[in-house]
Image (cartoon, rainbow, N blue to C red; front, side):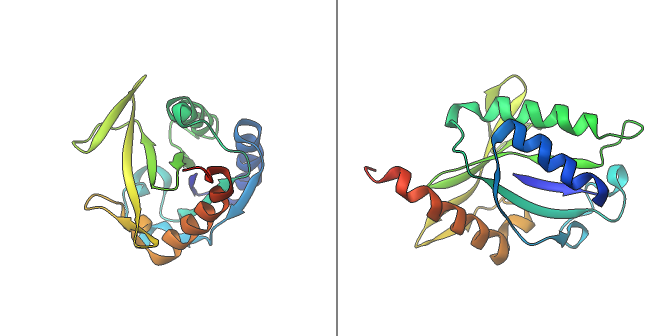
Length: 163
């Protein structure tokens, strides 16, 4: 789960709500200032947007990415102030081969999954690491991000022994 937020006092409550949906958070990446990567969310969320990633203990069904994004969109709306979000949640599907993000915005490289949600192949696994693609967001290209997903991937391997 990609997490962007502006109100530190909301972060624990956001985690609690996400854990009701997806189970306990297993690990959290470091936290960084998002503006070093993009000012895309600044008009809506302000200039002090933080970024981190969470992985969850429970494995989530591959076919449920659409429903996960719809649920996180509802949660984003609950934390909105004056029709402006204070949190942005980007669920993804991590497999041994890739990271696919869910998005409500159509783009040429995204595949429609249904109910207004698209899937974006963001990172692919090869040569013992996650590799970015030409459209991969700058923060997902960073070594610290790819290391976080590599560590989360290692926890998947016991579940895929027969592959």
